[in-house]
Image 1: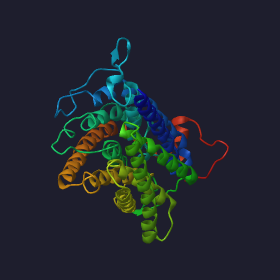
Image 2: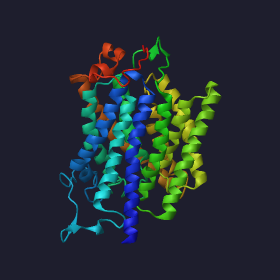
Image 3: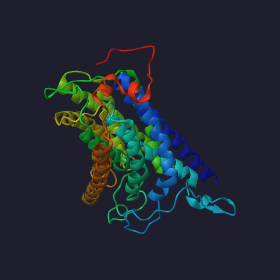
Image 4: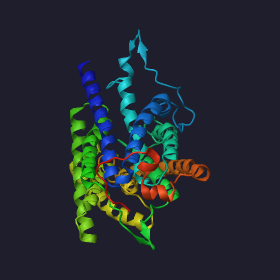
Length: 412
């Protein structure tokens, strides 16, 4: 019982850390965008976590962990609405899991569910209508994420392959799931006014880089819960190794991203440094418990270099991603997933092939589903604010308030 209690308390602490990450996402997004859209971004982030938890309670948890038969793709294994904790003689059945209770399991997994939509929020910042974004969040978090998650974490077909697909804490299941949707949304929305002038890239600086920096540090801290909790116990050796690899990958990603950026552009870009840290964190997430410290540094370093080139490629494709969400979460998510087959305890040709199958499978469901949701709304209710609303700011037009009413900047 003492071991069970220790495991359960550790899982609850990690749940709190993952919850804290939502503040980090909010700070990062508002810091890298303009002052006139701050309320809009904060509203979206609060909507995501509140509605996401309710949806995961009512539908998502049972859809993601339905106990379906081997090979089921998770479409017809729904176990019913709402939470139904296992009981024995009127008390909570502690045999539900050897490491934690049913309630802890739900809350920890629920914190992950909301993250996918948060990734999309940053990519579509400053020009997407709040109503369509809310509808997208409800469908994507309530339905698509749990179905996709069941393929691996619900022991669906990717888990039951001869060489099982491996994603320890969500490089693909969380980050790429959000990243694919972000890519689709950015393509269908178009770029912000002034981002590309006469075909040339124009920088639109964020209004509070110190706040963005604080957001990244908060996210780094929260990642200790994101990856550490994914051990699903307080096992001393596994949790400590996981925290070490997580931290080293983040550090390597930041340093290499800053160095590569300086080599290419001859300036020490803080925002690239910050995104390099996040890229390292996303990259290690798929195999954090399977890597040595040296493996983690290599994975993070490669992710940091990837960030610089991915951001450049996205700009050349004239895709407007204000916070670098696609480069960080999608591109580094893919890298981290494939890295499981290259580095660490599971490295092999068979594992790499399984990882590739997983990446393609999630790309298919996420691209198709997000395109259908957003394209239908684009053709019916519209997804983009008017030119006047965009120029004057979403805060004033969609919320009727300002984030800093006593401190105004001249923005164009």
